[in-house]
Length: 288
Image (cartoon, rainbow, N blue to C red; front, side):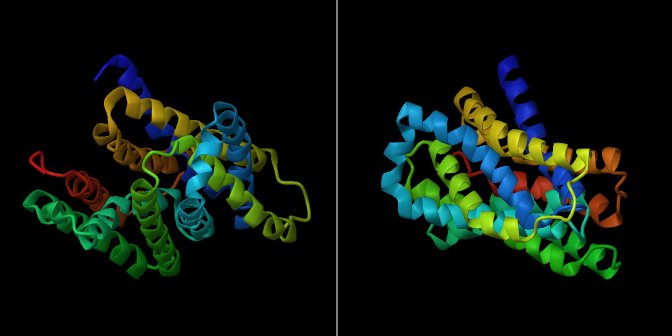
C-alpha cells in the first residue's frame, strides 16, 4: 500500500471511530432525535450541492425506492438506536457491537445463496466472532454495568447496517455513493426535524456539546465518506473494507483515553475475538 493509501486508511478509520465518543458527549445534554437531525442535516448540506452540480444526484433518483429503503436501514433506524443506546453504555462498547456488522452481512449473503459463507475460513471467523459477542454481551449484561436493552439496540443497528448496505449494493450498484448518502441524509433530517423540535432543551447546550454535534456532522457523517471513496479508488474495495477494524479500535481507545471509560472484562475478552472473527468472516476465499 502506498503512503497515500496508508494515510487515507488511517484517517478514514479515525473519522469513523470518533462518532461513538461524540455521541456519548452529546446525549448528556440533548435528545437523541436532535443528535440525529443535526448530524444528517450537516451531511446533507455538504453532499447534496456537490452531487447536484456533478449530475450524480439526478442520475441516482431512478433508484429512489431502494434509496428510501437504504435510508431507513442505514440511518433513520440505526442512528437513533445507537444514539439512544449510548445513554446507557460506554462509547467503546457501542463501537465494538457495531463491528459485528460483517457477521450479519455474511448470514444475509448465505440466505441469498452465497455458499462461500460456509467456506471453512469464513465459518471459523463467524464462530470466533459470535463467541466474542457472547462474551461481551453476557459479561457486560450479567455484571449489570451495561444495559441489556441498549446492547440489543446496538446489535439491531448493526443488523440494519448490513441489510441496508447489501441491498443498495445489489439494487443500485452503478449509482454514485455520495449521491445515495446525500439523499439518505436529507431524508433522515427531514424525518427527524419535527421530533427534534419537540425535544428542544430548555437551555442552550454547552460549548462542549455544541462542538461535539458540529464535529459529528462534519467528520464521521460527511468527511469520512469522502475519504472512504478516495480510499476505495486507491486500494480497492476488499482492502478498503478492513477499515472497519480500525474504527473499532479507535472507538474503544478514544473512550478510554478521553472519557475515562473503564476497560471492562467483556471488552478485554471480546474485542480481539470480534475483530479477528470479523476479518475472517467478511472475506471470501480467493477461488470464489
